[in-house]
Image 1 (tube, rainbow, N blue to C red):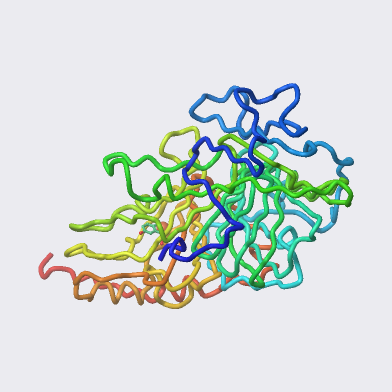
Image 2: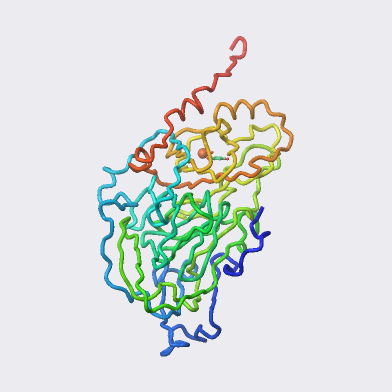
Length: 450
Ligand SMILES: O=C(O)Cc1cc(O)ccc1O
Ligand SMILES: [Fe+2]
């Protein structure tokens, strides 16, 4: 059920629309009229441009915002490396030494909560492809935190856009452009460079992140589906301007830059944007609003019909990253093996589970807060239990996934697993193949006389 049914505190007010040109002012009259950079912006604010694409990117792709703030983002002391021996969300210069490329199907037990750390220190790269310094590829991270970020801290990633999928707990995200409240079954995207602070109003949090090192997320084309369905444009929500005024305290700015952490001091709050306009902003989306479509005749369609957001490679139709969900839905296909078919895919498939049970894996090993990775051409499909049930099922209409939400990060790249993902986290199941597919029995019956 969409969260919109609940009244959300006034603190969080949103502007609706995907990739819309929005404007928002926390003080009436703070936005200049008719120009971006007047000699004297209203109320003595500084005008600052935030470019999310190259200046010269085609108009249809161009993303930028203008911020009107008390002091510019540049007003800080130099960055210094911080926790350089320990902090690394990207296997850097020699990726082949630090990342494991393996054809095995992998599955992880639920990742542990960690109540001792804050958002910034909760980020663990589990798998990925490419390199943020070349703006290519993606990182897949797990987060688990139990502490608020310090009251005078802000964080940003220069490496990519964060698509955040909370699995447990509530994220209160104060960004330069305004505040977002993000709960399980919702997602949010914090684009590269945007500064934010995460607090945890309801205690510990855990979830998944796809960090996109190249490009930005778009809505998938709908083709013959027409002009609505899947994730509808108006259901994406951007924050409204909200600012603090403090130029007398010390603040720390944390930067994730090429996977490493840097810190800089400044003597004013980073959250001083009084007004902004543009189409480069953080946003959230309630997965409960996804308008799911499927087969109403026969056969199991490709899961691309469940794409919420896509980041295309240079080859149209081939994604650096697709974010795909498996919401509660009716299965009505006749004379059909209804779960996913057995398959091998040139794309890699990383899956997670926010809650409930994924209908393609009923054997119990794929649990909320766990994950699986079926890499390029790694064979997979329903486990033996699911196959057995689905082959014998009475094909009445059935609702699957009630109260459940599985998702997939699908990528055209081969996805390598980090040392943390393969070993340190100690969640890799060693019986995944045995439990899923080794129990499948041959059912072949050679026709008599042939
Ligand atoms: O492997 C998976 O569970 C994900 C998936 C689901 C589906 O319905 C079809 C193809 C596919 O890869
Ligand atoms: Fe698959």
